[in-house]
Length: 100
Image (cartoon, rainbow, N blue to C red; front, side, top):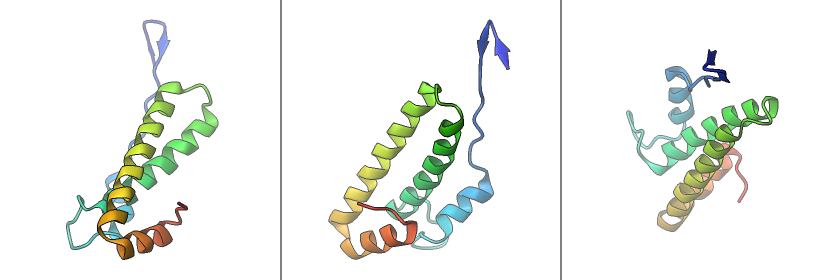
């Protein structure tokens, strides 16, 4: 789309189905979307989607900044979870395939 000489790229956000699938395996109870485990799973899915986009669009620096913010947010959630419940942290890392 062109707007005043600028090209605007709209990123597809995660669909409702993709969000549900990302959260489904990590939620503490039915309908849980706010636990650290669910947040990390959702952020990981968004990070994967945005990383794929950035491989194709190398000069999209605005999206790159958003990616870095999401990575920092995920790191904060993981740090909190590690401090509160080490076993849940280890299980989540293993389930999502994250390295620390």
